[in-house]
Image (cartoon, rainbow, N blue to C red; front, top):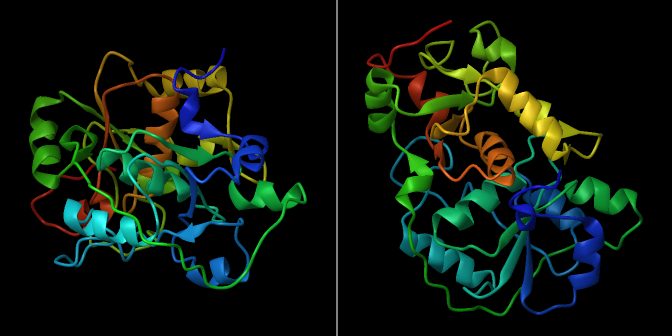
Length: 276
């Protein structure tokens, strides 16, 4: 069975065939990856720094920026509203999905993730470049889709109503409160009534390609994810939650949001209930 939203994932073969298309814009969305980008990146790619393209008025990591800032930064990267954006990464965190999700939040439909990212691209012997990139600026206008993002206030209310299923993308040990958090928090565990689907379960191979649609369906079914119920994905800081959101999107789930603050926010407050 093929993916329902197959256009949200492109292969290295597809990108190689379209790399010279001026309407295809490639972004490296590797978290904390600027140094690696300067050493090697896909030709014509620009570095999409979601730690910089972020809300400047919070101590939380890479929270969504206001639409105006997103538009300013994306335009400076030479991306226009009618471009097809292809996000990739070189990180085991599969942070390219964060770039994919951010573009969707700000109203950009023509955005895809490169399946396998830079590791698969280079393993196949495809060309890479190094050094700084200076694209010609473009005009970009950002919208905003509130249905794709959730706040802590909405998650606190949801603990009482249970209207949306929270799917936690962290490793099982962290979900159970036994594993160490990458970003230390005061509390360990998970949001009450949430279920655990480690993002790594959705991927395969050294290059972290997405599993087949049948395999994804089985993984979500086993975790108790019901296609009829709206979902909110969460993780440590809102990055790998986007991998799970993309996995659900590939299967055609059209009511999937990301809790942007994730455990970095929830686990550091005293008004948030916690289960282990």
